[in-house]
Amino acid sequence: MRTSEPQTKTDTELSEIAWLSSQDHNKVFHSLMHHINADSLRGCFHKLDGKKALGTDRISKAMYEEKLQDNLVLTAV
Image (cartoon, rainbow, N blue to C red):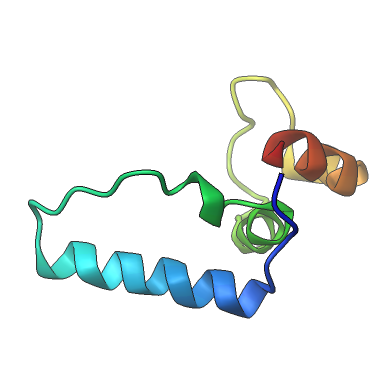
């Protein structure tokens, strides 16, 4: 597993991918998983609205946050 990239680098790369996609709707991207890591997942988590309905697993944002670091590490593996 690669070491975590700094969040700003990951955000920049994902922003570039989003921009490229918006410019060419037929563009195909391959192998994007290396952009997903615990830092990028943490950033996404904090952007979530905690007032939304529970997930299919019946876990709320607050419940997930109780073990956030462990959950992110397991997800990013």
